[in-house]
Image (cartoon, rainbow, N blue to C red; front, top):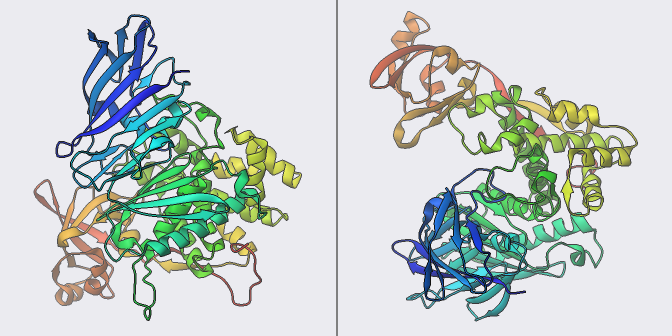
Length: 593
């Protein structure tokens, strides 16, 4: 069967343009092509066709008229028996993991941004020709696609079994750092762009290897053949280190990541303690999260996403499971891999709990509804988002926590449920009923009441009781000033800019609103307090305790639409944080095992 063939070239680094040549050996009489409007794993219609330009078509020397049917679809009347060759350019200037980027330092693209889909021929073999970049002799190429004929730098011909596979293997171009390791017999490669000279690649490889081995064994056991049961035969990590950025996107045998370059591990001299910061732990959690998706969403996936529809939203109520449960296991498996201790794990978990508890939207939207509405709410956040929605990542991870702890009370674990679902659904589409069936098969009872309460209602989760059942001590922490007031702020440049006001908060009661600039305050509880406290310029919220002393009443001086407002505000004394602790002498169990 003749393959659909794409040639991708860097047409102009400074104009950020890729040139794509698409050859369709046997076009239909009326051939339709389209560019996806979204990329699987990121649930938002992003309209990639907005960056496509200069689309032309030929059969031999004859130009073929190209008619546009809608925002992302084109069609051409073709003569039978002659290949159709399309040529076009794609503007690439989105330095994220979702689309495409090209400049004089680096190139990157997802197939959903560059590769037109040939309607009616999606299941045929597809090939990708990556040409070297002119004037960039030291550039390399890296991708999870299967090489057919490539040079030492990675340029050349690659193949995919079908269109879905082609666009599920992003491509990295540039002068990146590269390293490799083997986990459970599976070759893994890690490429990093934009790292500082002090970057400790060996440590990143060693820590990532531990993550991969822990996750392969999680799914397939500890035997020597665990790696042979995995759904991938090789794997590629692509990390873009930037001044300020964070995120990842999973693919079938690779992942694209972005992080702050300051969060990468750094080399030290032999007498120094290896450099570690919270940012590096966060990066390891991201690596763990995206690698876990190799099983949970890329293979075991929602039934609504059994086949992707690239033309529109693909709705499912199960992102709380596929993203939320993956979020539960990302840090948990760091603990089991020995990369963090129990105290660090409990601190991370407490932070997640606090994030959900400080979101008024958890009483407005169920986590199942949040999954369905991802297309219009989660990826389109505004000042009212925390009041109207709940994250299927964070609350979904707490649903997983509750299930795990409840199962442990009955002699089972969520680990067993996940492995059971892998076998039950044969690494394919999954429904909520499959989860319920697996839970009942393991415990001999129905879990419909728990799923209804935890997933399909807005009642709070029984976290304290279930954590206490594992011997975890839960105590309250005084929240920071933004949390106490119910504010989301930006304090860059010595100015307090209000980004959002939480429902039912002290800030809402005072009349603060998104867009306000909080300039200063008067201490006003009493004449004596005013005489002692006076008026103050406010540069950051955490200065308030020092300015107020023992007082709690103030008048906030606020600028709104160039008008100055004086708003009466009472600072509440409330403990809203969660602090989790492991008692001394507690026997080994969750979360380590």
